[in-house]
Image 1 (cartoon, rainbow, N blue to C red):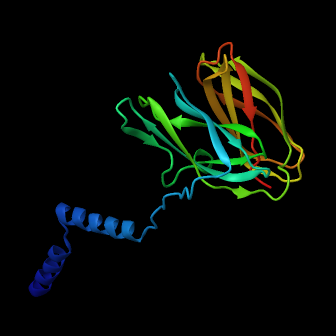
Image 2: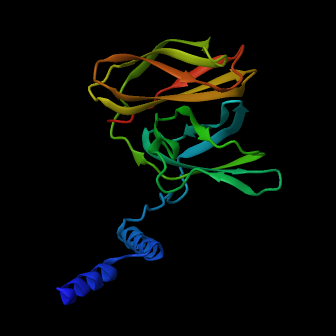
Image 3: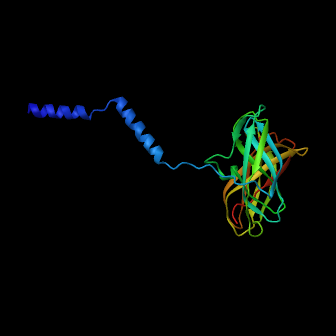
Length: 238
């Protein structure tokens, strides 16, 4: 019995794990799991677009944060879809303070869903960090051609109104007159005063069924008081 008790004690002591040993074991397991996890790949801009021009780029800011508004023109006679768009914000010294084209970025924050033939559109990124940006560089990649006309979407009853929080927003109704359901439809909004963009925002509708309509609401970054509202909802499904 004594020998059995000593054997059990030895086994118990051998099975004991110090805090340091446990920490090292868990760290090793974590590193092994990370090594097996697939690495998010950076999006590819590809070659520069020969069809799309950048007409204007603006950064607006307010207590809500900052937003970029980039106006593009499709010079080609065909509608385009999935237009890659990379922006780089720089401070007064020329140092990079933000880039949108990063792994894991939301699709609508690194590309324009579609642009009509010979059409213009102002794309908005309202997810910028609060940085002191003095300039914005814009690069546009080549996009795919849309085989035929874009689905017909119409925005009605849009207006700028005051939010309960004290800021300004925009609301209205969007209708899908096409036979293609629009998934993750993004509405871009800019407010212009004297032709200059003074506020920008966007809204995302998870789904807008074919032949259906839905209300939308968005918040502005910047000061939209007394400004003219401009909205666009580029189709995402064809």
